[in-house]
Length: 343
Picture 1 (cartoon, rainbow, N blue to C red):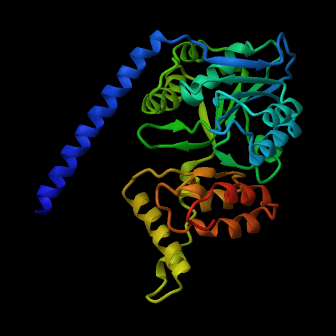
Picture 2 (picture 1 turned 90 degrees about the vertical axis):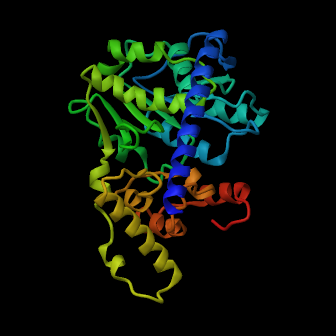
């Protein structure tokens, strides 16, 4: 019976993978029937001066709002000396959202959510003609995280374009090695490279998220590495995965349920390391990342926790211990968004 169950799971997995692949390919082919640009509005019109550091901020909100945590992030980018190109996939923005963005951003592009984040990134780069002669760094970020929990200067100080050409905040070994796309810092050598131009010229307005992840998020790092460009993570996966409190593993029976949850998750990390099975650093290793002064926490982890991380209820204590910062903007956003669970 057990073997039959395992066989059924394999067959179901194969059928599901075939469906995903075929749907993704169909979506890619259909993208050639769409206009390359999905921009429906922009502010301001005409040429806009940008500084040596440019941040492309990718946004989506079903209500057309610009949430408080997004405004917090934009203010942090401005304080770190970035010109901000805000690209919204929302398709529409409320009047108060436009007002807030005009105060915080240099350029606002509003587009349909076709091509997801990579479609937005491409349109931001192309519309602003980046790199310009004065461009030293392009920072690509999005609203999938809460933070920063500390001034961005601390993170930016760890970026050295003499040792790597492209920096991600984090790296993933899931599927194929790649830098995670929620925070990418790109230096001049990469911005002027043929590989960078070729990659973005191949990004299509594809409606399949599966295609975007496999071919664009993973594909960007693979293509740059193949061209001889050096990619690195500010928070190395191998450094972070080793930071597990081994004392938790010795906890006995009948312990406090919160302690038990920490033990379960610590065991999950250790078993994965032993089996050489890659984890998602921003989810499975959230505690280790924060302790290493990674200044973000994934919004999806606190809202939905799709991977079932056992110990995520500790996030407030860890943030307080490491950063001692005000988390009111996170708590207010959770009050609005959470359903049928406590934060």
